[in-house]
Amino acid sequence: MHSEEDDVARAIAISLAELSSRRPGKHQVINVDSDSDEEVVVSKKKAPQIDAEAAFEADLQRALEASKLEAARPERHESLPESSSATPQPAVEPAPPPFLSERAMLEKARLERQQKRKGLSESDATDSAPAPSKRPRIEKPARKELPKSSSPANLFYDGEVRQTANRHADPAKDTKPLFRLTEIFGDTSTLSFAILTSYVSDTSWIYGLLPPTLPVIFVGQPREDEQNAPTARNILPNWVRCTPRLRGGRGCMHIKLMLLFYKSGNLRVVVTTANFVDYDWRDIENSAWVQDVPLATTPAVISKSTPMHSFPKTLITVLQSLNVKAGLASHVASGVTLPISSLSDLGAKWDWKRVKAQLVPSIAGKFEEWPSVVKVGHTGLMMAVRNVGAVCPKNKVLKLEYQGSSIGTYTTQWLNEFYVSARGESAESWLDTSKARRAKLPLPNIRIVFPSLQTVLDSKFGMSGGGTMFCQKKQWDGKNLPRELFSDSNSKRGGILMHSKMIIATFKDPVEGNTLAASSKKGKAKDDDEIESQVGGWCYVGSHNFTPSAWGTLSGDSFSPIMNITNYELGVLFPLPAEDTERAASDVACFVRPPRAYVRDGDEPWMQDYHGGGQ
Image 1: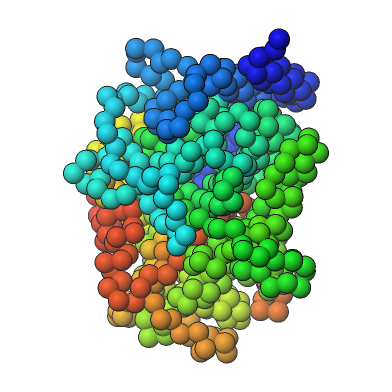
Image 2: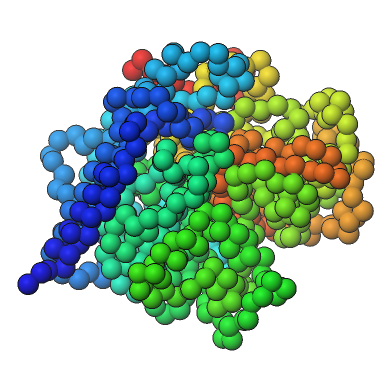
């Protein structure tokens, strides 16, 4: 008689055999590009120290062990502790999180390739970015009780933004409600289906948190042999892994999304800044937005002409770009019963009326003509701002505070291009402005919130914990970098570093010397006069770092616009109230406000390739 454990073992063995037979002849090397927040560019050069396929197979083997342990233990109804692992932990200092170690190896290989590369242009060199230069060594502290978070029974029909639980936060400052991954999942025995996406992932860890019988579509970063076309294939029992196409092998699938379908009919939508690795949910700070959506009392009949709530419509577009449709087809072909048979069911079967946030996507590719351009990138952000009624009033200046974990390569023109969209202003008027005039605009009112060297040194793990913060020394030393826009990133919860991506936008009275608000009024589209804000600002939370690769670059003219985007990204945007806006902004912000401006000749950002390279 065969046990369920044996069935799982055989299924995974078949998956591993398939992986071995399909393994490419050369190793996969990922080059981490800071301009795209961990953007990957796959090189075909050999890197003997790294075998991504072998690492993936080892990950699946760990998933098998987790499955065996799961089958052996009695049914559970409570959340796993965040420090749980599929295998016993030795009583010695633990190794660093797997994905950080991998990034360190990738960086070593990247530097070796860079030394051999011939004819690299200066612009390419500027955009090439580091990963951690040293394996971080993180001591595991004694467990402590984390502050009370959401109960699995809680439902968030109006949407909720919280920070993720962190065992290293200062208890005196860690007083607000939090989200834990296990509590976001809730009672996993009540799940019927899940769609999960992550840039980096520990498959064995996340597999061990979910029932092995749960159908899952997992969207991840394409490997070298998966970049030219979308893929969908079985990797574990009941798991289908999908990847999107990467244009020219550049960019990354950087979206962190969960769609959790429950047997009750409830749908939980989760947009986070955290990857599916335990480190992101335990040792570094991230943000999560959770929205519950009930079943519609009367399912709609959807056709191409049927009006659809903007949220599921955008969500469906994003899922199509990630090749989730093929994952659904794979499950259905295997005889699996799912709560949706097509992506359009998302708009037909659930009632989205209480969703107030706007989805803001970036989809890798080239977009032409206004109907396409305004759906993605920073022009998609502009539409989201308009849709929530948060267009910056003409007599106000928009103040942006952008917290992120990766620094881009900036020009004054691109910063103003982004700023115009963030104000909710017409992109047509921006393209109608001459390039010469655009080039002469002053720097916009943006604070780039990124941790200083001192902040990293003073954090819980010091330099060893800075492995997910990306800024290169050559970026900081670049003559055109707007250093005066940089502010320090300090968590409101004490000495922990933040992987959160968050924009706080507030309306302020103009100050002398800031002319962008006035200059941008000229040539505004007629419909701008009809869109006056009734709110005090807005907040964005999601995967976008403040980089052109994440938000895109607008070109062309007002008749033939072109938006080029490198990455797949996703976030949500919601308004801040007009009354007591500052209090509301500081309440939702993950960082200390106002962020402390860098002291000239005194502060510098954490640069792992420079500060951590020789340690």
